[in-house]
Length: 352
Image (cartoon, rainbow, N blue to C red; front, side, top):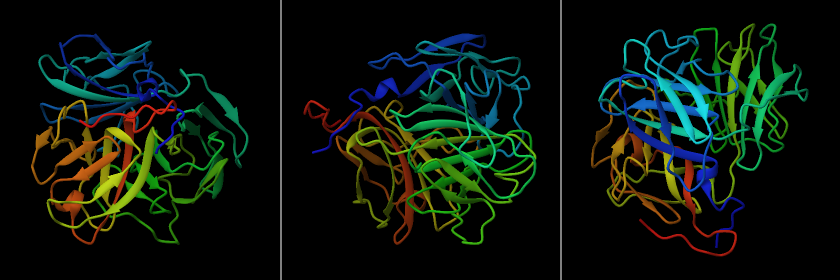
């Protein structure tokens, strides 16, 4: 039976859904624990809009967009997260009222806790980095600013080897690079549906270790620019970062996670298809087929071929769509828990 050190995942990850008011509003989480988020990823559900990301290391109002390769900005009138609160966050829709808080529009926000915005200097790499660390939940936020594109190591502060490294240039037009340990070096583009790059000659992410990750000479991860990296390490009963193989039918594979999922993101690695995101908040009962796409502006949609069951110990594919269950293809996933399968005191969770 699964064992976990995190009995209440809502202390470290929560999903919030809300309806915008067209003015500044505070969004309050409803999990078992209060959660002051350090990473907030907002997506409009009811309308075409950007996927916007904010974190407490870069500071409020500083927006990155996962589906575009534009530089960091302060919303440009389209809305920002303007505060990280003790149990949620505040949105300011600014003037165009679309990305985070338009009147009557619906939204979802996925939130992770790190260290309350408190950072420290890390000297493990070839250059110093600035890190914010939550070792209990296996999450760090890393800032680094190389002087040139020389291959170098970057300290991440995790204390163990990350399974996920998500890197984005802040002040250069570049793709968002996403490394997944189940496939290995080099990575995929979060802002694109292109295949996962496993070329040994890649100039992007070239190594991941217990104290540092290694960046090559590609400006997507290295150069005379400012970069932000989000790193996760798998924590039993709370997070799982793995792969599965599609079978192409509605009785799809079962994927064991060791918990009841709250959120999953999926990408086929060896075919050019969109990323897909599902969560238990938008899909409150099985089957779950309410999907969003982080590499496009598309609104929330439903499709039976893109459906899952969220179970007490994992998830099962109930659709045969090529982007989630194509026969013979490999899929990576990133999953966080609603409840552990079994708590540290031996209490099992229930199915949906």
